[in-house]
Image (cartoon, rainbow, N blue to C red; front, side):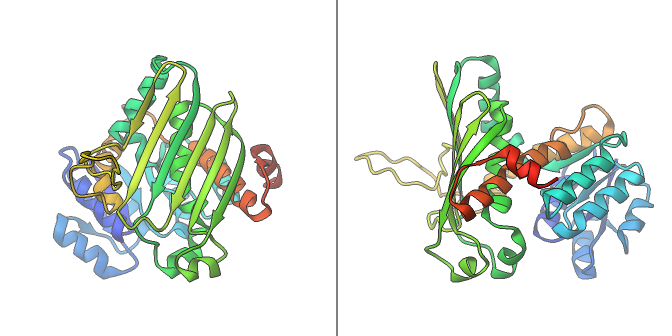
Length: 336
């Protein structure tokens, strides 16, 4: 099959490399507002360069991967769907939930599959944890913990337009705890602080945050995030039930020292970047997209799924601002 890629920045170029290594992908057709980025990808991966998204859509592609700037996501998704082309789009669907809802209304009855890029759904450990929940081997759940600790904050220019730590970072945790538990969050209480880069505080954001989630069956979720984890990129998931517990991310490259005498865990160099921590997950995610394109499976992460994680992020953002618990029904109602 022939796959288009719109946006050849860091993640777009990474996806181009992954897609070019899949046997089923015969050709890539790429486009970027920065011509040099598209040319570099073409030279590296043998791709064909198109001078605009419209040219990509008209080139006979079977599916399109959208890794452009967030502001461009809604328009590109809608244009691809209108052309009848299956879409993979990195999160978020749009800059705001209201825009995302507009996209949802436009695509849900189109018959064209749209997959949103929440890669942790394809991480082997998270998949195993979900299977343990579904099989009942953990028993009734009482606690789920998800952690995302970045080694260093993103640049000031990115922070200024990111929407904040809950919408940009913790939203991955919100999506994975929904997916693994199969339950919906009904209330949140979140807090945050700043002890690092001053520009994060100046942008009205926090650099470290914790969120307490209450699910519809009474399960408690605990989410931890920071922009400052000097030891490396730490992403873990724990699921605790009445019969057993399971964890994802406890591998030999976990960036956490043990204080116990004689314990050498972790054994290897710590993860220091999301692309090395999740490289196999990204490959599995894009392989799944080729199956979506081929019509052999439905989208494994729909626009509606992505919006559910965004509601939690909105509630946490409001909770920090007003220092109080926030129910999800409140932010849904406020969004109209």
